[in-house]
Length: 333
Image (cartoon, rainbow, N blue to C red; front, side, top):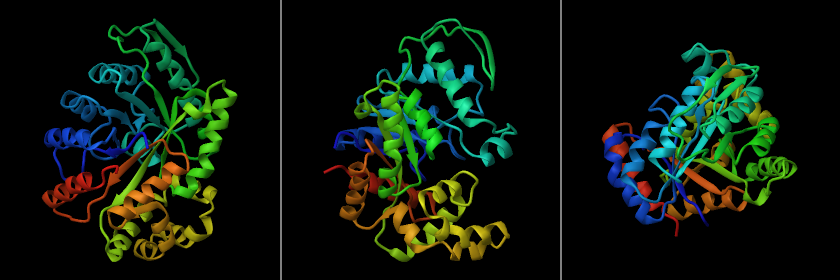
């Protein structure tokens, strides 16, 4: 296995305290550390900090939002982060969700496929230092010229769930970011992006797939079931992820949960989360069980598994201790 990654910042651990654990992770054999951007820190600042602490880790954003930043600001953030981590940075872009884009930021989430295509084209030109004007359908930028573009264009990954975005990732991206799916689901989505990459004249075997894999480091199935119901009910009822899982074939299994959620019966919805879905898309158990399942994602086409560690404790200090212990334990053998 070539790559083995984690999501950071770890839960419960302040950003400044990550210096030691990221340096240790590098020594233990981890190759990658990718950020998320939901309700914690942004996608770029943790990487800029971590780049100064490490020498070999590759960093990526999974994902940087293409709606909540202007295209020029996104280019500036990308350029600065690539300069902070020369040769070790991947830009992962995504359209996020209506809750984050529209409710939290007041920006209409419209035409995500077109916006992604236009953002990627803009970035590929602007990050070379060329004077760039984009009269796009979803934005306008006139006469943009970045003065610090030494590192040029980093690899661009596109967060993709269903067929259209997977095909766009293969066509215009260097990789795709997968999320909230099982190892067997990977085998369904990977060929779509690879086929599009081949049609675009790329070597499909060089197209990368980073995948966020949710790991609960415990053997207690009751705890996993409790946490899993909250996590799955919170995510798989959204306008982004429920259609994704319908497409994957879980529509019938998840429909009772979804109907209860829409009716405002949240406790009923939690109780209706199927155990088989918890087992499908969450990873838990002893070290061997976790590592073996992560490897099964790789066997089905993931090139960079990125473990997102979910501690079982509620106290931040205990969360930090569990997260750090999991990083130390779940090293590639």
